[in-house]
Amino acid sequence: MEIHDRQADGVTILSLRGSIDAMTAPKITEFIQGQVSRGNIKLVADFSGVDYTSSAGLRVLLGAIKETRAQGGDLRLTGVQPDVLKVLNLSGFTNILKMFDTADAAVASYS
Amino acid sequence: MVTKRDKPRIALVIGSGSVKCAAAIGLKKVLEREHIDVDMVVGCSGGAIYASLIALGWSVERATESTLRMWTREVTAKRSTRGILQLTLPWVFKFDESFGLIDDRLINRRLHDGYGNAIFADTLIPLFVTATDFYSGEQVVLSEGRIEDAVRASISIPYIFPPQKLNGRFLIDGYQSDPLPIGVAIKEGADIIIAMGFESPYQEHVTSLMRYNFQIASMTSNNLLKTNYAFHNLAHHSEIIPIIPEFKHRIKLFDTDKLPYVIEEGEHAAEQQLPFIKSLLGK
Image 1 (tube, each protein chain N blue to C red):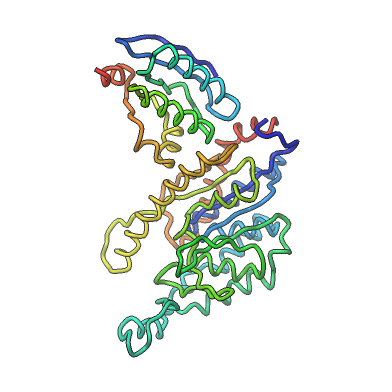
Image 2 (image 1 turned 90 degrees about the vertical axis):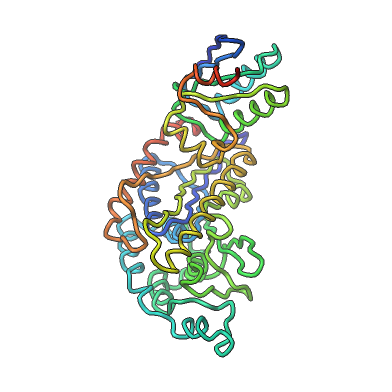
């Protein structure tokens, strides 16, 4: 799992590449917690490089959503691939997460 | 590794979905080829049929053949005179919880012929079949006694088949309490849960009371599937791997002629998730 971050208009864009599962979940959680502790609470996760998410992945997402929202921020998604979208749909996450077609649209949604 | 145990316990959960559940045979084929042993099998409704065949260790050919014999259009062809009378004159013919529009004698006979007198203790892999208590709405997990009774209870589609009376309880279709009973596998101590689920199809046209009923039932069941799936994913300590076959053609209740296609799609869906299953197992 590779994670890179960049800033755009006060929003932190996280680009993830690989699978989100029990083995990679701790690294992602740690990365997001690091961002939040630095005050970066407006997050956009670019999932265009994520090919799979398991139950551990869903738990990571939920943790990040709760943590950022509790501080007035959010975690929004972009570039969600069909296989991952299927899991998000099935688990009802599409009802609680904001998703956008492009990273620009996700960043703009914060303004 | 996902667990501190030397070898994670693997569960296979097969949800409701009528003939589509035969996709589980394709999934099992892939697991067998990769020498991935399953420690328990859980099935609900149509999934209960395939869960039991897998647990009994039947070959793909035998499971397919058995489905073709058991599940044909004839099993719902004969209306139940009692059910119709109960519906039209409920006070005279005493409408009660045993109501069903279809005469269930043929399906009961087919299940008996299919399973013989097999009991849960005969299975090679521990088997759990789910049904729903008609009066409390609770999920009932069946793991002992005759397999045919458990499967019959699990496939008691409301309005169609009368409930199955077992141990003093009236049991109806397992999908009424949970269309994909992952919770059973969690409770039984599974680590890695391979869950094959299906959303209920919506009607293309609603032209009868029965189709209207199926439409409402699909909405309820699909929403229940999602809610429970979310809860189980968040509650489980380890991994749940969803296997969701995609069918390009609509598979109807008695489309057993499409079994080879359904099995193939199950195999295909399993192949897609195989890399993740193998990496979890350190293979």
